[in-house]
Amino acid sequence: MVTMEPISVGGQTLVGVEVKLPKTTLLTISTSRGYIMCGALDVGLLNDRLGDRKIIAGRAVGVRTLKELLESPLESVTTEAAALGIVPGMPGHEALLKML
Image (cartoon, rainbow, N blue to C red; front, side, top):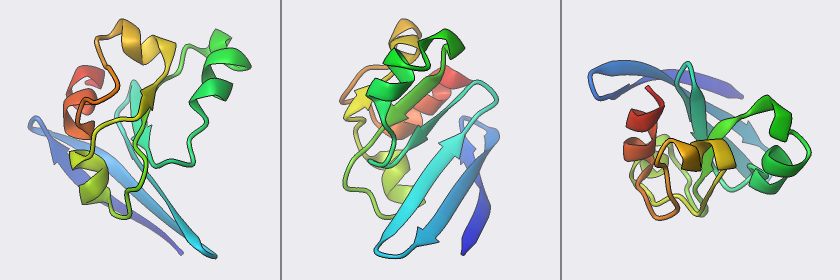
């Protein structure tokens, strides 16, 4: 099942998506510039194989809900996210503010 819901961050409405799969749930919250995602995100792939796309993204591990994704510290970020001042350890909602 796929669920989409509006997520308010910094007075902006973002898109939260939850995809329930067997034995796991994929979570992402996106802006028009980038996104944060659960541990399923492969930051290495985005940096190495897809670096030419300049994807702005961050990964939080161990999250089970969109609320946890907003509050949890990012475990890793893409090179392009780092260029915006998004760093590992930053809460998801702060990273999203930098992506607005």
